[in-house]
Length: 260
Image (tube, rainbow, N blue to C red; front, top):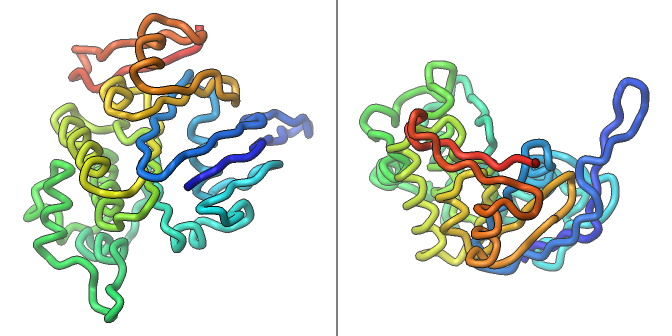
């Protein structure tokens, strides 16, 4: 489905010095895959997600989606091809209500009708831990907290039901109860649909339901393999990383991987 070929991305500072954020990455993601990408902070995970979605353009290399070269396509073109993206910090939309945003995300049927009805919208919101009655008519603006926005954005991804969905740290800003709901959402999306999931995460519970784990450090893939092989190594502290278990004083919702 998705292939990254010799992908690199660099930025320049004020002194015109170049820094490589992503270095010569080669990865292939098959259909109906559930891939978790993890690694130390600053390792290039979010940048890689943005390259996949077209928010950033690689310095070199190619991105193929179902055999089509999408390297120079923008985010709108990739969305039309069937790629969804959930930002680490969701965008606010002044003047748009939650129900309208979900309907826009779902699009139209072949007959030109709205793809989702009101009961569907309520169901999507319930799946991400929001009471539909309290949110369907809310504006997607500054009146919503970051955690509420994150859950609404994930509801739009569920509504779109695209072949490939990319989530950048979906656990960020989410309370423990809602996070438990999200785990169920990801499991259901993978079990009952034919789409593929790529999730950027530090969270052990997300890593523990993925089929494969990719460890990214210093802009390069330091490890990749089946969950049963990679996760125990992360927990033991190999690959130059140490896994920090959930902090019970923070509701058990935060864990982290960092480079030693």
